[in-house]
Image (tube, rainbow, N blue to C red):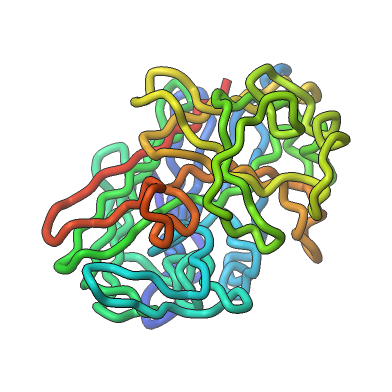
Length: 334
């Protein structure tokens, strides 16, 4: 069942900001809104059967308008960093927004997280639609993006991205929800147990840009092929970050098996992550502050390779003119 949550009308960029609730027969539900095509709440049962919200959120919708942490939003046109805020494509160099020092991050100053999407209810799904004009943020092509949310009877939250452009353009969309399966604002996700089904990550420099090398995780703090407590793994790290901000490369095709699994020993909740995309960015929320405590939430961002547009041998997603592309991510709570 889908309903529009009642609230005082809120206008942003000349459009009404709407909040939708998708509920299954058990009473579990997901709330999404058209500002930033954002996940606001994911309310699912724990081992005691009680419902609890497992994503970080703002209580006041208007706080999302000044958010600095990408809480729950859709990120793009290009998720993660583009080095030196430029990339070559078809013999031309494109210059995009420098919103992260000398680099571009998460689509620039006016990425998808800042847009008010049009919205449709499609049976048991909510669709958000945004159009980005040629040259916006420095990216080529008039781009149309559809973000579709669905929530099943089995507590599966599906996100489908459908994109089409009239020019070749790089795209990489992701959702930037911070998960805390303890369902508490004071919880520290470093106590969560994590498994990631891959033996390879990208080597990153101190600015979280790929060096171009692919590293095996064998015997390192980044090896989660067997389930491990995050804080225990962190003890073996020797880089400039307490937690994780690492890109894990998917080795299996399709969505038959979960790529990652997160679980809470406190609540008993478990989240399996499936995706069609070639990897995930694991981020433990180290830079959260103010309203949110550091490591108060864990991001598992399915996406294409960071800075893939500047590494010819990386998997880079160049959308061909007038060819629609579909990508998907599924979060299964149990």
